Structures are given as C-alpha cells and as structure tokens.
Image (tube, rainbow, N blue to C red; front, side, top):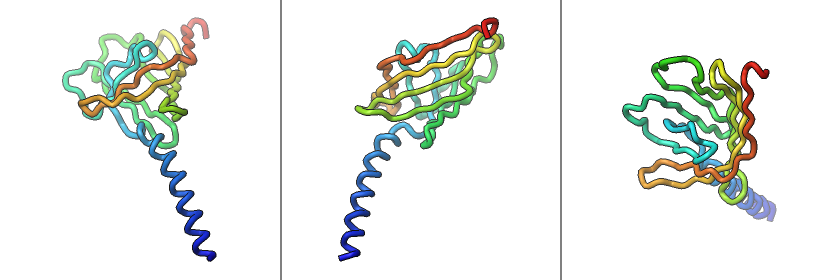
Length: 147
C-alpha cells in the first residue's frame, strides 16, 4: 500500500514538472540575432545557424534560470559611438505562450536603456523562431548627460 501511494505521488509530480518544463524550455538555447534594432517595434528572429555575411551579429543565450547572456560577434565597427550592448537580460514564460524579456544596456557613449516587452514564439519553416512582439511594458532611455 505504501509503495502504491509513493508511486502515485511520483507520477503526479513528474507529470506536473514535465508540463512546466516543456513550456519554459521552448526558448532555452543559444541563437544568432542580426536584426535586433527594431525589437520593440516588430520583434526579432532567433536563428539556429550563423548567418553568412552579416555585418552586425549577436548571440543570445537563453538559460534555464531565466538569464539571457548577450554576446556581440561583430568584428569591427566604423565608430564606437552608439554601439549597442546588453549588460543584463532576463526572460520568463507567462501564460498562453507569452514570454517576457527584460533588457538593460547601453548605446556606447550615448545612452542607457531599460526595456521590458512581451513576445510569442512563431516557429518558422527554416527552423528559426520569430519573436513576435505583443506588448511593450517598459521603454526607458536616458542620455549620458542626463544621468
């Protein structure tokens, strides 16, 4: 009897854990991003393979703990002013397939920003994921001379 109760508890727990894991793990992984400038207007694409001949290229590593690790792969910039970078990034799964992304970063020597926005994932035929913008929750930008 005791083992039967433990078995039932284990099955219930594993099913409930698997349900949550499936939803949140849809975004976990490292992706290439080359067109991020309009992420608060039109969303952006997460690419599984490195694009060829892209001047500006980043990687976003969505970790299971909710952190987003940003890396700039751009080899050279004409000018350092205004170069985009993310210092901190976080993500979380919400209800109905919505994901909230939070970023803090800067445009070098120009301004700092903090944003929060909601997206849905749209799988693409080529295997990439389109992060379709649903709502901008926060969009704060402060020039360095205002800080």
